Image (tube, rainbow, N blue to C red; front, top):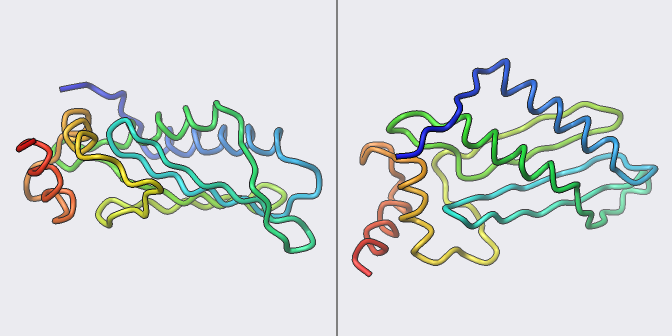
Length: 148
């Protein structure tokens, strides 16, 4: 079982603040809001990023690679023994520097594309969950992964 460096709430906030600084430094001029949907299971990261301009129009944008590493550190650092970690997060940044983040620990993310069954076994190996902390959708696919 892997050991992840645990992040307390202050360290989580520090990491999110560093992520915000990284994003602000790379964003195109004139941005008003950024929304990042980050979904991860096993070795399958899935992200969607949108930048809203002052005209209200949304554009696709690729953040710096370091932002994805920060999401991975945050996810690993929030692992709770026997409870696992979150499956997805929605990070919103509003100009000039106000951010919010919502974590999804239970609900099935809208993966695009959906990860194959092997990723469920990898997820359970990396972030072990006790049976009581497995959402039904995860438990079903993990069982199918171990049968195949």
